[in-house]
Image 1 (tube, helix red, strand yellow):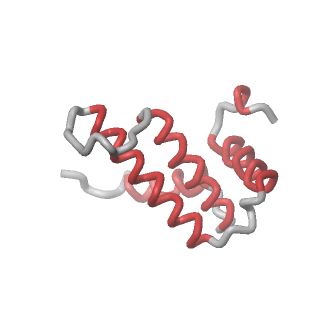
Image 2 (cartoon, helix red, strand yellow):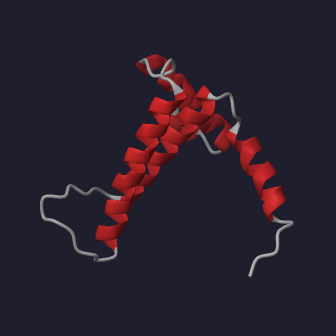
Length: 104
């Protein structure tokens, strides 16, 4: 499967899981993947902070917001696969619940 040809969440999750297996990450414990997700989320926060002009130390390494969003998604999909959760199904089910809530 070529990542450039994928256009849906289910296939992206399958691709990411295949890459986890290929790279030796498929046996990582869920808590390890969760810690990695939190680390990537912090990097995303720094990138967003930089993009909106908030100040921080010159020694703070920042990268592109788009790249950090992708890192978060990659780790999240790997975590979901580790826990045998289909993210497309999970998002659909959660949005069905959300659509019945009152938002103010």
